[in-house]
Length: 111
Image (tube, rainbow, N blue to C red; front, side, top):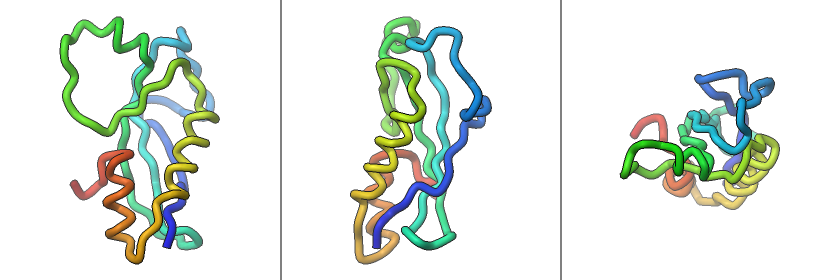
């Protein structure tokens, strides 16, 4: 069994049309629908997408937590390509085994 990215969206904006004012300073939530390859079923995994420069401009001294992906500049096709490759490497004998691997990428909807 292998994981497959089925869909993705941001609750913050329309990911297919949005472009940030500064392509090097951004921060948003990305929700990923991932399920078994060849199956319509999926679960959601949420991940924060953050630019390196956003981190430098942020006034907080410390940000706790995982489930973050850092990018140098706003490039959705590159981001999705990397996520798809990660999903394709998540293989297991059961969906639970795969979810454990995917939880390193994003927060599982039932966590």
